[in-house]
Length: 346
Image 1: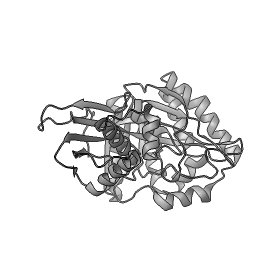
Image 2: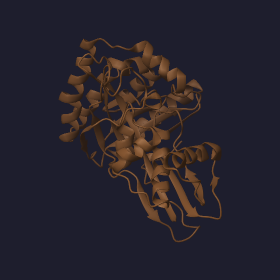
Image 3: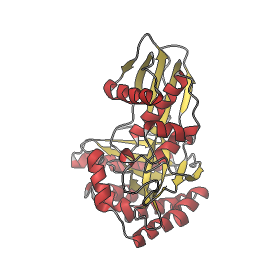
Image 4: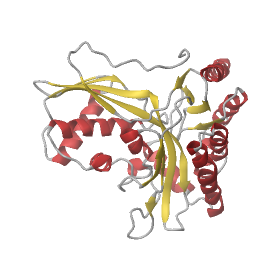
């Protein structure tokens, strides 16, 4: 084996049904973007070895996959060339786990039935299927959650990291307009909730009032979906703005008071059609459809964080409408192609 695997990351717009009284729970929407990304080069070696910033965690993921498959650690050298930031709202672990599962199955010539099988192998997608579908084909994704109640797929409210449910059925997948740009701001002094903290937030916030859930459903179905299908960025952006104020997404945003609401306001005042926080954050995103506007929003939000003395990264990302890709590499010196990003990173 001598390949390079590149995965997208995803922005999660929020869970839809955090009530469950109709016998279904979860559901969500989101998009795949090209930056940040994972880039892994994998080649045959005399023994298993990982090069990168967190070799222990990568080895553990591979060992868990191999244990489930009944296989030993493969004789591979895995080099992590680029890595999605953890606990920042990008679904980093899902992308890494799926990439490694794909590589191990290829190495041992194990046939699998679609991305759902890979997700079950690594235990991802148990609450939101957005990251799994983003890995598979990119684009805008909408899923309809899991059956809920005694004897159903889920009988309690848990995040993906603590759920054993299979990835939710996908309702819609469509391309994101290629001229849309996502402006991302990631404060470096904070991270999104994860682990036991995330579990506790889910359990303490459940259930959301069904009237509130109904508002979320209406915004998604009657505003967000037609916005993306008709390439109407104003309608789509308005849906993103509304989702920050209702349902479980509002719970997530309020955990980051006052910084995140202020950042969303700065983005919108600078020209974003809509702005939101991805998953539990702390990353926030804005949306526009031309490079000049994207740079203006980037400058405004970066300047705001600079004035507060908050260390951060702020950049512009393009849509990813194809998901992960694999390329055979001929030699060790061949590098992953750079991401074409308009504007300068800060």
